[in-house]
Image 1 (cartoon, rainbow, N blue to C red):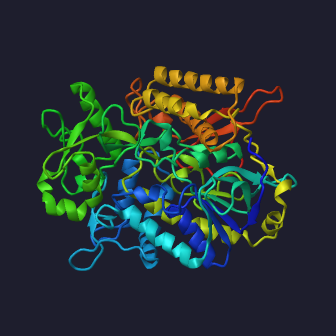
Image 2: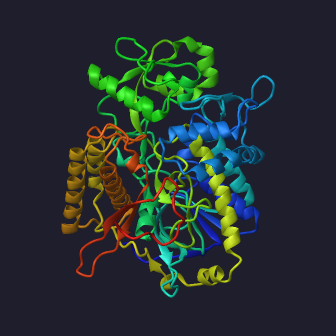
Image 3: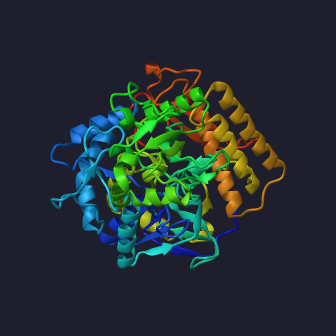
Length: 570
């Protein structure tokens, strides 16, 4: 639905996204002699990584071990983590963090000069490395962006990726690059293409499908939507983590809201209800440091019972000096909104934060589409299961990005990739066997999608609410079919949000149990018979002209299957 590409550039690998995952892939590929091109939706340092406050988790302390980190990750994942993926993460994690430090990231140190470590929810050890007090993501983003500039890696900014390109003469359906739209502020303008035999999706999350989120405005699920249209599989889409402590700014607040890092509770902050009672005591052995799904559910129950829209996070006992040294970013954000955490409790409530599911990959980041890789929040490696352990996200992006770079290098041993890269842009096909999602939705449908998902597919879900959500999303599609929107950035983003919302609602409807961050009011207990991953893909449009539809199936075990042809439908 976009105009043909008016320009193109060539690369060995195109990396879509400029967070910790994308920049790490590009740097590692460049160091090995490949030519990467980075495509990013805004500026290079404006992705989700920049906003990460708490830190990066790894077994770096003398009293810690990968086995301890593995145990905490598996518990937080509510029985759905892929054991092999978790073991890989915690084993390779410490060395990956040290390489990040070698690349220029400066973490906070303790009095002895060692890396300062703190705790967050679900961790039984102090294993969270942080920078700038509560500006870890900003420091990691700075270090990697500086390294990318120093390496001279070509970067196309202000560019919305549109679809995967494939060579119609290639029977494998392998990637040949991506089409993209540069939004008037980059080196190229309009629709163009980056031609490459390897495409790495590192596009971040999809938090903008909800009215209130911690995600930046660029997090519109573009990578997941692109992958679905290309024929790739998506797994665990129902598991969207709601961060329990987001600054409450009133009932009319919309969009990205200030996050109050879990590290505040890790340093001793307390959660209080309307009467001043510590309501997490007795709910979980770790109280305020329980896994995020436990805390978010407890806050939601408390506010419903007491008829209040928020609870309080009390850290007045920190004192001014600690707030200014350890949490300067949070302190400034609170004061900007008229709250001084040095002298008063902080009003907090849950908000959409992190997608544990995404484009299904193997342990090398390979998707079910040849030549298409995914890492970071856009991917589902199986590490997070039903609920991500705090501060594992940056580590996952780092570890699996390094593995993707190694896989891309290994794939170049054959001649086929180089031949595909030489195909002219005007001979390539847009999209893939997944087919299109239907007509373009107008930009004014975006707040409607967010309202539907917040009302019916948020923290609390039920069969009735999910049916309502599915019906209202279908109505938006029907309206668009009668009057499709004009192609453009806003309509492309809205259409991506709509597709991702449909996928989430379908998976949440099928998972008739409560597990991890998926909470079904009508099925309040976990069901071991459902301890499987739900996988979705797009069924192409039918010959009779009916649009693409979703197909869904369950895996045979908690281990994700290899990224090969999908199993038979059931």
